Image (cartoon, rainbow, N blue to C red; front, side):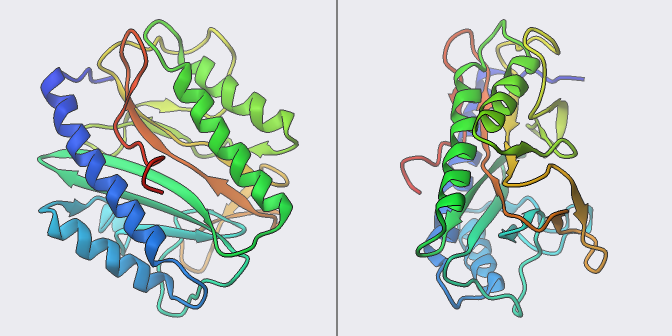
Length: 254
């Protein structure tokens, strides 16, 4: 069931979103060749707690950390580790969420570490464009299929594939609410967008095939089947009759 939020709810979600955005910026600033992913996670955790908020992912379905940090061929859900170091030329996806005053904020971005390949630069740019284009059409009266079509079409036009096994979601007092926000779809199909809906849109785009698998060793990290690179960008928004309210707008800080 889709839960429509009040103006008061959305105001609280904007605060949770602002903390999430700043947590993502903390992660970006901590990234550098040679640092461990666990050290980045610790900086983010410290910041979230300093804001009297809680890391949304920590303990969620058993996940052991505050951030998901995924490198190169890892799509999502990478577990921070003291044994995993970031290297020059990597692309690093960081997903972070917070709970503040019972509401969730959720966002993600993929970052370049130093000089990266032209293919990776294009992958990051196109994935970010998929998100921005999808947000632009996320207005009352349009449908979820319009969002999915916009993301899928832009990725395919640029020679990339869309991961179909994972998607965006509603959020509010829960991290994952209805509806599922697919990254593929048909124009004019799906649930109608209604003012007061709050959703996380998160394109996941692969350089190669769309097929993925979950690492059997840690049971969390999602990787590309062909070992080619993947990018992930996410913002949370509230639907209105006009332009959506972006609850986790990280563009000015990262």
